[in-house]
Image (cartoon, rainbow, N blue to C red):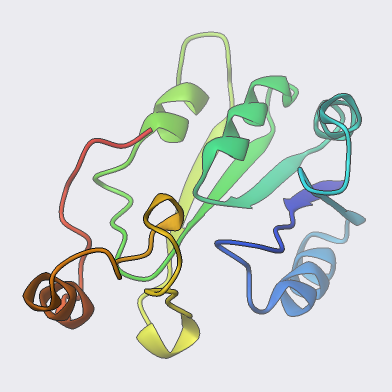
Length: 150
């Protein structure tokens, strides 16, 4: 089966139902969702430990790929303007000796398929605390600049 990490607050998969259906049809496998917001960590680990594939938005929850069985796949979904080439901790994890995981990065390249939240608090990625010039520069950019991550 395939596990999809579902999120309800940040970095949502806007077409999650469509993605789940497409995965089930393409791979002829059952798809289950897990959520850090609704489930215990141990139940998530249990689900992941039997999965053939883990699909998730870029984020800390991907550390759970440690519990995938050898030969499984990790699909990391990157939000609009975030380059997979610049943020590779989970790619690195998947390719460590003994992990034997297949890693695939997917990047949203279409701004219209993204929802920004500039008014959120700074610790949730908001930019309202910055001066107006900096806010305008950020909103006009098409790529998140390289920065310390993860």
